[in-house]
Image (tube, rainbow, N blue to C red; front, side, top):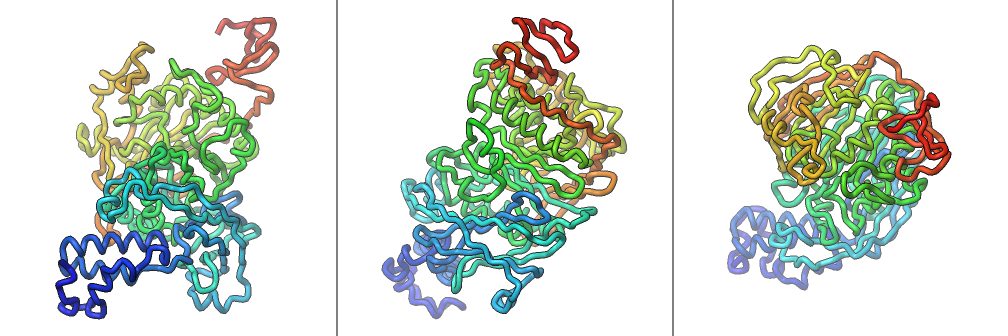
Length: 600
C-alpha cells in the first residue's frame, strides 16, 4: 500500500505525508472544482493500487492541480454573429458559483499584469443558468473504473454566457473569465479585418472522447493544428465531441474535451461548432457548453433539441452555413421511405435561401454539418442519408453551395463535385490530380491533390477524425454490392441508393491511421485545402493532401419562394417545391412555374 512507503524516497514528493494525502477528510470534494477533484480521485486510486514512482508523482501533481470551487472551467469563445464586431463566450462553474464576468483586452498575448493594469478593458457580466442534474460518469466505464465514481453520480453546474458586441475589426484580443481572485487561463482571438484578405481556418471532427487514448489523441491533433497554423482565425468542429449521448450520457467526456483535448485550440481561437449524433442527449449538454447565434431556433415553429446548432456568418469572401440535420424527424417526415422531412425542406431550406439571398456577393458558399449526404465508409448504408439527399440536394443546387464540410464517417473522403440531378461526378470540373498507389486502405482511388471547380455542383469533404475512432474505405465492389433501387431493402443498414457510388470519390479516399486536421486557406482565386496527420505529442505533422477549390461563375440571386410549403402539406392555391422545382396546386391539378400542367 502507498501509506507504507515513505514519500521522501522519491524526488518531488517528500513534502507530502501519504497518510494525509489518502485521508478523505483532508481533501473534501465540496471545496474543489469538479474537473480537478476527479483528476485527484483518478491519481489517488492509481497510487493506492500501485505505488510506483510514476503513480506517486501523478498524485503529487493532482494535489497541486486542485483548484478551489470558485474557479471557472470549460471556457470557450464561439463565433456569434458578425466576426468583425461580436464574439460569444461560455464557461462552467460548480453549482452555486454564480459570480462571473468576461474581461477582454485589445492586446495579443496579454498577461495577468496587463489585465490588472488595463485602462481600456471590456468587462461583460455573464448570464447564468443552473444546468439539469447531469450524469457525470454515466455510461463511460473508463472514468468510472479510473476514479471509483459510480454510474449514478450526478452534478449540477452553472453555465455562464456573455456576448461581446462593438469590438474593433482586425484587432487581436486577450480574454479571461471569472471574478477577482478566481480568474481562468488567458485566451486569444482576433476579429475579422474590415477588408479581409487571405485567411486560414481549421476543421477537425469526431473526437468521440471516451477514455484516455481518445483524450490524448485529440489533444495531439489540437496541439499539432495550432503549431502548424498559428494564425488560424477559427476552428470548425462539426460534432461528435463525445462518445456517450442519450439520457445516460457522461459529462466527464465533455469536460475533458474543453479542459484537455481541445484546450490548445480554445486558448488560441474561437470555435465554430454544431452537434453530432453522439452529442444527442435530453440533458442538453451541448446547449449549456456553447454560445452561438440562436436566431434560427427563435424563428422556427418546432424547435430543435439544442440551441445554436444552425447559424450563419460571413468571413471574408465566404458565407458559412453551419447547420444540423439531427432534428429531421421534428414536425413530420416520411418514416417508411424517408422521402420527405418538413423540418429539413421547410425550416432548414427556407433558412438556407434567406442566408444566400441576404449575402449575394460572397464568392464561396460553404456548409458545415455533421451528417453526410455522401460518404464511402460505414455510414454509407445508414437509413438516413437517402432522406438527407432527397431534402438537401435540391437546396444545395438552388443555393449553389460550393463546399459541404462533413463529419461522421471518420475516413478521409474527397467527393465530387457532384451533379445534384443525376448523382454523377462532374469530371470536366477536375484537373491536376496526382496518380498514386490505389486499392489500399490508405487510398482506395489512387488519386490525391487536384483542382475542383464548383460551378455546376457541390464538392463534399470529410477530413477523417481528429481522434482515435477510425472507419475504413469501402471498395468499388462492395459499393456495387450494396446498391439497390428496391425501397423494401433500402433502409436495412445494408444498402444505399446511389448508382456507381464509387465514381463519386474523385480524390484521396482512405484512412490516414492518425489524428487528422485540415487547414483551409481562403485565397483570392480559390479555397486551398491542406490536410495533415498529427504524428506525435511534439506537434510534428505530415502533409497528406493538397487541393484547390475554384469557382468561375458568380452565384445567382436566390429566390426566397415566399409562400412555398412542402408537398405533403400542400393545399389548394399554395406553391410547393419538389426535386428542386417550383409547382402550384390549382383546382386539384399541379402546374409548374411556366404554367404548364404536370402529373409529376
